[in-house]
Amino acid sequence: MTTTIVAPTLLEQLRALPDDAFTRVQYIAPQCGCYNGCAMCSQFAGRETWGLTRDGLTGLFTALAQVAAERNLAIASGRIHHPRVVFPYLDNDIGSYPHLDHYAALARDVLGVKLRISTVGYSSHAVGLTAMHRRLVDEHSDSFDGVRFSVTPYTLGYTGRAGTSRQAYITDLAAALATYRPLLDALGHGAATAACELRFAPLVGIHPLTDTYVDGHHVLACGPHLLISRAPATGELPETVIERLDERTQPVYSLPGTPYLHITSDTARPTPGTVRAALASTLTVAHTARQVRMHRFTNADGPYFAADPDFHTDGTFTALHLYPPPASGPPPGTPTPLGTCSTPSSPTSRPAAWPAAPSSPPRPARTSTPSWPRSPPAPKPWKASTRRRPPTCASRSIPRSPRTRPRWRWPATRRACSSPAPSPSTPGRSSTRAAPRSFSAA
Image (tube, rainbow, N blue to C red; front, side, top):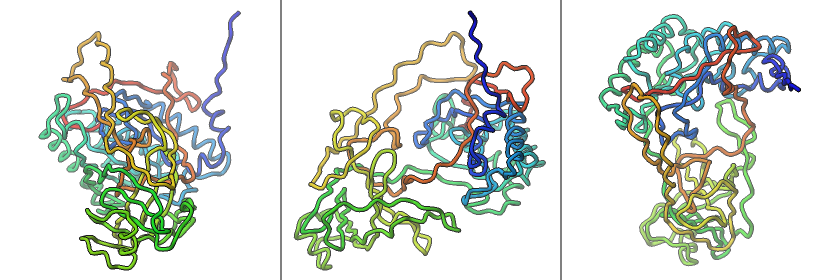
């Protein structure tokens, strides 16, 4: 007996989605995978890349537009953050996608939206890719809302890994900037329009965290940071959530935050004498002090603390984020599995050792010799992300997003397409092995 499985068509699948899937969509990624392997990448994308073909793009975008038109909906119109704009990247570098010019044309003519792209650049030696980017700038400049080049020390070429070189990376980046110069000038230079972003190592410190009550006040101590509640406290801080974004696309919190005193000192300790002296402004040890608003947020890893998590009115950003360790976990030296963390009311101290990630097993030998130089992948160090947590406190100046209303993303599926004639119901796909080029771009 033969069993036949009938899969729903793309149109049928899209028609089963709620309206928010169309009005709040933000990411429509035509490609997955990135061969830079940047340590700071939250996606930690694999170096296998695959993406939609030109016919696949046409089928997907036509189907999206058809279903949206049936409901009288405008794509990406229900977001406060960059409405009517889509982002063609998430765990990929869109600069290496060979059909980005076709994507831009479809976004403008079929979906009626504009694009914001971010890339580390692309190889100036890839003839077809450089020609595509020239067409993109010459013919589709009106499809863009913003362009950003990321100059980061984590990329393949910048670090000189896998047979690449720093000089080749610089040359390729300069060629890409020269190609995009007319578009950058037309958009107007600025952080929200056209910019080069300099990315460096995050400001992270790993120290034991003390979360306790001293002399009737809630006290948090982590490294040189000592945070003392202004008013006496007996219970934990209430949880703050993001309710919405304001007209400046800044978060609006459910609570204003609790007044705390932030002491920064190498010698101040969370003792009753220190707490009383700090609150009375009579602390004699070398220190700096400022008034902050303390929040307790919660994300997939559990609760964490944030002092002044938003930008100040003068545009400065001085946030301090404290991420507590789990209340219990595996022995020191082993990665901590994903889980929630608690905030005990008694003094808590954790070892300051940073757990080393286990070495990855070697990949099986290839049956063919690649056409590009490559060395065996080195074991990757533990990286700060929401996938696992160290059994220590991390004090960071870069905020981790609290829970907000989920945004819809349109990833393509990983199944290979065997249809010889893609249509709006069966978009075509292509899968390729990402070969690192002589610079660093994915």
